[in-house]
Length: 229
Image (cartoon, rainbow, N blue to C red; front, side):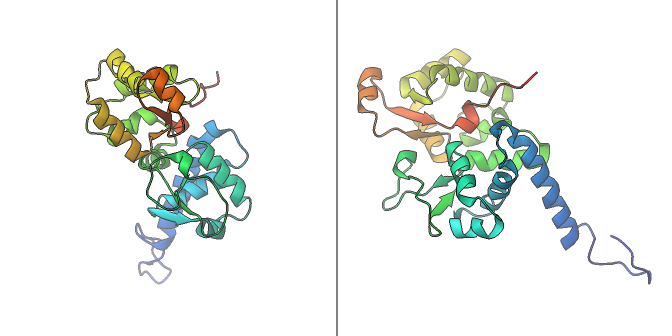
């Protein structure tokens, strides 16, 4: 705690003071911006601020983001939704299908951050790195907690889903290839709830071809650009 000129401790800049909390938040924001470099867009600082805001509440409205974003709220939200970092809530009945919640911009639109992205944002605020293999184990108790097999699983699923769509059978094949034993149906249920993937309700032809349901996988986990040398 700092000391004032009269020798008394100042309550303004101690470890739990408003200025120290503001400084810590600014440092987390800076590290989050660094971690989001994979997005490769000029709006990364604004996207980091939007994610930092959304992670503090289960549900956020567009109007709340408009209060903290000086400009380009619509472009920032489009960027976040494209990477499935932020999801609009489906109107009407509850649904985990991303395709049932189109981004119709308006101040009353409600938004949520998938649980897996919340884990990624919190970890990135501490490390400055976006490391899905470090947090994927938190999305299901069926998965190992070590990052190495999860990194292999991410890579394997990416190979099965070049168009961001994968079947349940292909997820099962990826699990077997990396040696992870888990109930496929239970894992898929966990992953849908955590925002790792979403059911593809419109892909009836694909279901017939693969003989199992199809899912859209989260690009912020499975489709990060390769590091530049």
